[in-house]
Image (cartoon, rainbow over all chains, first blue to last red; front, side, top):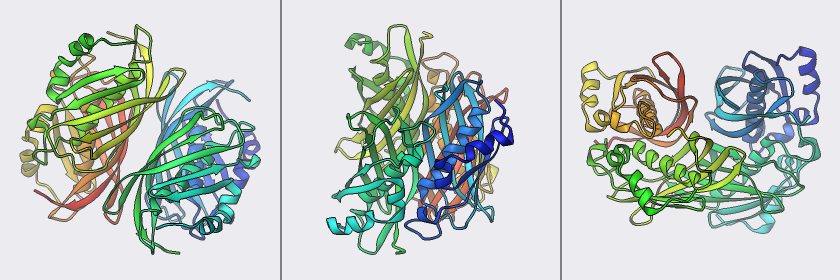
Length: 137
Length: 137
Length: 137
Length: 137
């Protein structure tokens, strides 16, 4: 599936992304990119640093967008597993996640992703397997 | 370290836990247990189901509490990696996470955890490695 | 599927298990147990300690046996992913792996396993997702 | 540390690599590359396909070589955890693994790796965390 900027904008207005501070920027051709602008309420226990669960959320979400660029209309995906590594403290007010599909085998899609801060420092990296399912919405 | 119920209550009032809906119930002897009461704003894309990032947050947080029961005063921990499996759709308004320390080797602590719904159905399971660090706060 | 001791014995004579030193002991009801008697040629770089790849092999194999107790005749399984933690040096001449199925969702089966030495010390722990496939042999 | 081709050749003659069929080709600057020429005895249960434990061994070993290019003389490394994804059946008589260090934080080193067959098809991908330790040999 391809997603127009307008359609992505529509998704970006959901309450979950808004609360977490995640914005999907692009999703096409097995790749996706997002921006995280941390919600100060979610910067805990270290002020100014989004919690690891927020970075995970950005990564999982961006991987899923990379996956859905490779499914048919009427399909969606769910996470089978995701392994995340936290490589450095996440300091700053903007983080970029780039995710890509590594391989698809039947209904299983393998992805990887990296999150970097504004200086290009790697703060988290991960790989995950997703299952393609019939869309429920 | 041991944590009195009063001290845990204090932590539970932070804005991150409040937004995510996570409450730490107990933390002692290398084990911790928490409850997630999902924030409807974070139940997306499936109404009534907390996003996988919310379940991850509950798991990561509960693992960290299990770890800090085994560190000294003045120490804290950070996540090295966490692998999460999503085993079933997370339906319901209360989820319990139980985490335990598997092993400690020097400053590396190995944990595992499971999240179940109110019917006892497993919805997520994971394992993670943490590093013991000097407390920054 | 259920496996008689005779059938398991037959599998245990394959050249792969023989070289690696792995013997499946039991497999029933979503659980499996194996023994590793390390081949000295595979104890490297630390004499007397099987390489991490040997412990991984024991774990992956034992998980797969746990999975196939839950599939139909004419089906087999393949590993989607496996995350292994090495918790302590693997010293000794016998290691036991216990694996169990955590959950099955359609054709995806979620497992976990632990490897202990003869003193009961945990040396490795893991979790993996498997896909049920038509048997090719 | 830097490793001369002669020194790498010396390591390649150990009985573990010989049995598994692994040869380290290069290791420098946080990267390493190896070749796997599968031992037929270890191609089980699918003839002509090395077992997943053999591919894991190649990956873990190659990651470790990438790590030790970044440690001091007198240091070595051990695996904390490694998550491997199996993306496609491993058919063929030669597989190449490329591993690289993603980041180092204190004594923890984060890596990733991919294994491809002779046609360039991805058969396995992984990420692992290693701990730098004093060399024991």
